Each structure stands twice: as structure tokens, then as C-alpha cells.
Length: 347
Image (tube, rainbow, N blue to C red):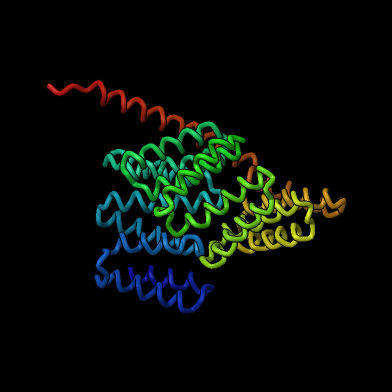
């Protein structure tokens, strides 16, 4: 284990020095039994706490937590490790790997009848289905996740899923339902949590922008941007800069739009965030078309097509199609198991 910790420490060299040292000392302390939380749980907690700013390091901690949970036959923490890995693979657009990890977590939570765990899997699976282009199934999974969290009275997670639902309603153009969700989010503000502050302002900004309230949208986006920078939420910072650029383009403030979008492009490229980079390219094409700079529009169109081909190459599409079939079979098996349980009568 000590050798793995050294390897992990070496992987953290590009970070700030104090963080590398802190992580090393904390993990070393855990392995020597010097922490009250227990080794597996602490690795998971630490992994989750640095995910937004250091996703690669968070993933490595998740892998260590997985090994720890396997050694200790700790199934619940093993499921949590699968969730962490699945979330990371989703961030990196590794959709097949994401599906495999969340299915493993689903099986464990099903056996343990862990309601909040199942809800968490469905929430992540909803995002996966959205990436697969199956918005209808994604929406159903999100509502089911919210229902399970309500059943378990897990209101912080209810808040989190409502944020996702608000985004889905806006995408579908269901603005009245989105407004009702924001009202409920305001009522549940005490359960907002650390990341909820960012996503509330991001989604409220998207909502206001869709209603052409561009000034209100910019105000919300700027709040989210400041929070993302403060918390070092790298992928979120790239996204919010793209949204600021898009909103500025809608207002015909093309100079500000270009500034925001180029910043988003730079962050996405430096951190290898392909999906965020593709979003930035898409907006840059529209920006330069609107400003009649067709040469730049053409250059970014080429970049967009090249990156899109990389993300969705033929082999990748085939894998996704295969994965979607497996996910559908998994959902069908869940229905069959449920019917068996309802028909079972003890003698």
C-alpha cells in the first residue's frame, strides 16, 4: 500500500506543493489507522472533496478506495468507489467505461436495498443517457431518482436532482415547469450545499437567458463563475465562460462574447475537456458568423468537426449503441425482479 501511495504522490506533482504534501500525509495517516473515519471511507471523502478541482487525482483516490473496499469486503464503499470512477469516465467522455462502473454500483445497491444509493446511480445514468442522445429516457431516470430521494427523505440530494430537472425542463422549453422547480429550490435553500450554489446560478442564468432577460442571466452567470473560480471547479469554469459568451452574443455584445469564449476554449484545451471544448467551438462558429468574420468561422468549424469526429468516431458510436442495449436490458431485468418480488408469497 505504501508503494501505491508514493506512486499517487508522484502523480500529484503538478499541483500546488502544499496540497501534494497534505494528501500524502493524510493518506499515510489513514493507512496507519490514525483517522477516525476508516481507510475506505476517508479515501472516498477526500476523493469527492477534490473532484471539481482535481478530477484526475480524485479518480486515483477512487481507485485506491476500490482496492481498500475489496480487501475489506465493504460492499457499500465499493459501490461508492464505482460511482466516483463512473463520474470521472463521464467527465472524460468515456461512456462505455462509465456505464460499466455505474452498473456495478447498481447491482450492489439493489442487493442492499439502499434507496439513496440507487437514486444516485439513476441520477448518473440519466446524465449518461443524455450523452447518448436518449433525452426521453434520461428525463424518466431523473424523475425516478428524485422520487427515490424523496422517499428516503434525503433532501440535499433532492435539491441536487431538482437542479438537473430544471435544466431538462429548460432544454425542453417547459418554462412554467422550470419556474416551479426554481420555486421549490428556493424553499429547499437550506439543503443547497457547496456545489448547489454554483449550479443554481448556472441554471437560473440559462433560464433567464432563454426568456431573453439577458442582464439577469449575466448576473447569475457571473455569480456562478466567481464561485467556480473560488472552488477551482475547472470543468464548471469552462462551461460558465461558454454560457457567458453565448449570453453576450445574444445581447450582440460580440467583443465580450469573444473574450469569454476564448477563455473557455483555453481552459478546456489545457485540461483536456473535450465536451466543453466542443461547446466552445460551437459558440465560436456562431459568434464569428454573426460578426461576419467568415474566415474565423470556417477555421473553428474545421476544429469543431475534427473534435466531434474524435469524440463520436464510428467505433465509439458502436460501443455506445452496444452500451445502450445493455443498459436497456439492465432496466428490463429490474422490472422482472420487481415483478418476482411482488408475486412472491411465503409459505
